[in-house]
Image (cartoon, rainbow, N blue to C red):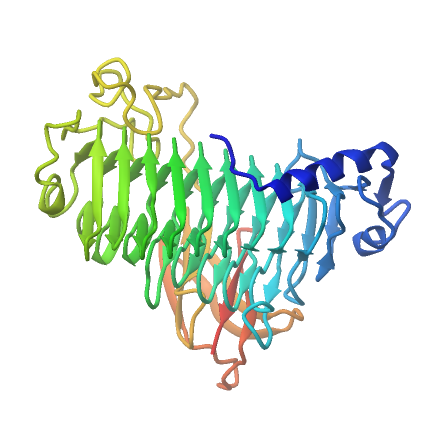
Length: 481
């Protein structure tokens, strides 16, 4: 799907191209000891080539026309970890596009006296254009919006990226795109992020964003207003989802997606499966917003597939609505069943984690009569390997951000001795929570943000550390008093 660009943006690309004629490679750490030192020495068109390793740097100011180059073939080998000391990096008022390839941004914390400073924990893009390829934005936090990244009056592309486990006190746990910005997200995973609205992504104030061939899973919009577990769009925003899987997201309203106040969303060939809302609209919630939906599956959402109020009206074509709690083609959808190719049949997924379709699925391109319905066609994987009995240890907390109570959860594949503690960003242990034998399965540990002496801790980022079986697992949490 083509991305809309302004004339100014096109001129920036020309400037970048012309600057590449005199490009130089600046190598970190062999020629420059830090990424900050290399950035200070760059000219437009230069590449900063970063050797594999973890770089403990923060508040980096990106330079116009520069490429940060890690190792796209080995995601995670080049990590910039801000250690909670500030945001990882910022692109502000630049006259040429920046490229970030094969780099992980982690440990950023955006905080301060105003919303601007408190937004974009991993990356803040303001009046600039940034392209990310094979990049990872993981475990960052913002007191305001854009735990992983915030875009304000800018342009951003993500290709083959992962945006995971970021948190925001307000909107856009993974990404916030606001104020007439443009975004294109392709072949990207947005998962495990949390915010008050738009757990995975918030798209606001006239911004135009397309998500293509991407997965939005296990995101949470908690607290108030709790709108849009995966995606929230409002105030004239134009979100488009094409061939995306939106699954296992949670919110108060709009477990999968929430659209309001003149947003004009379009969902084409999307699978919206097993999302949940505490109040209404497990799949889609719309108020004062019309959604155009075609060739889409809306299945097994709770407490309903759709809830639309205040003139909000979804228009569906060639879509399958099935198995949702509270009924399927009911309410505002009652007149659309059986017309425009709409139907209600079990989509026959391969299983609850693989949303490809079984042979004979009524949604498959071969059997629907309207072409492929949903994001994924027939393609169940039959494994001949010996089944693996162990699964990864899981560690997290909800709500996150929290004030002052949260519930820490961890899951063990087998029973074993566990040590669970909380550390501050300086690496000092502040609270020992568990030290003993724990059963297999999920355990829950409440915590009220007090240290071992019973003293209330201050706002900021903290690190959960779980040790078991000779391995160490970590997860970042944010206390926002």
